[in-house]
Amino acid sequence: MPEYTELARNGWRLCVAPMIDVTDRHCRYFHRLLAPGARLYTEMITTGALMHGSIPRHLDFDPAEKPVALQLGGSEPQALAACARLGEKWGYDEINLNCGCPSERVQRGAFGACLMAEPALVADCIKAMQDVVDVPVTVKHRLGLDYDLSYDFVRDFVGRLYDSGCRVFIVHARNAVLKGLSPKDNREKPPLRYDAAARLKKDFPDCVVVLNGGLTTAAEVAAQQQHFDGVMLGRAAWHNPNVLSDITRADAPGQPVPEHDEIVQAMVRYADREVVKGVPLRMVVRPMLGWMSGQPGARRWRRTLSDTAVLNANDPRMIEQAWQALNAPGVAA
Image 1 (tube, rainbow, N blue to C red):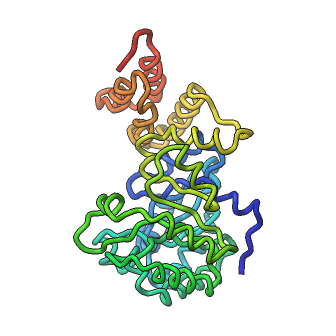
Image 2: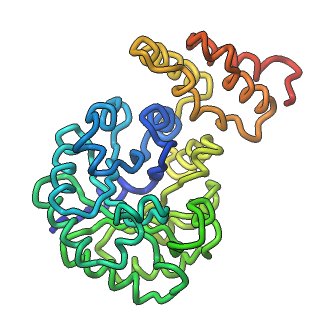
Image 3: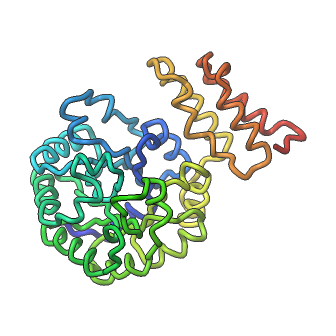
């Protein structure tokens, strides 16, 4: 069973959550510039998509993204093992099993949060993946299902996976309501219970326990880093990406973080490479839209980067143009 030194624990100190239709490889490349030491996660990729679809389309990433984790969705041990082996071969640093997504579409596939009701099956899935890879096999899960707030439920779930050798748990500190709430509501309405997540760290002290849910500012992250081995940001990293740089500067003052103009130039170079491959420029700049949130000129920045006529030209210089417009004298909106 894996043992984690303090150095290894620090590998999860700041994570960016797997988000469907958000954390594609372009988003991850941008986030890497903002937070050089963060651990980045793919969107959830189902075993069916990998076994029957285009593997390069799902698994390709830029080496600059590392450390990067592959999140899998599935519930069949052998299929998960085959996909985990593929992920390790492709160069991923971690294989993560999704036991937290509450969407009805995912439930119809018999995976995601509903798997928390079947800890023995999840343990079999974890063991099957561990048997074929050397990278960490981890789990992202909720605190419970529907409106049962019993701590015993999540403690027993984690305990069963602990017995199978799992040592890294990413805890979204809310329940998942399987019927009646949309995925968006499930991120907001079930109450946050950081105290219950912290109990897991006390009950399983040799595990890496990463807190996810409700964290939006560097100050909130710093407060929770006192109680957990790491934190994971989701929508905050999408709506206000600059928070990743704020957290890095506060938590790791010795870690160089590129200045804004350096990030702009790096994204122009990246966009040059991607456009040549046939990638639409709009896909590359999409994660940058919220970057200047709260700054003077933020609306002008967003308007420039989302201007269809400009995007259709597929000229990466438009990123520089947006930056120049934002910094023009007298810009206030």
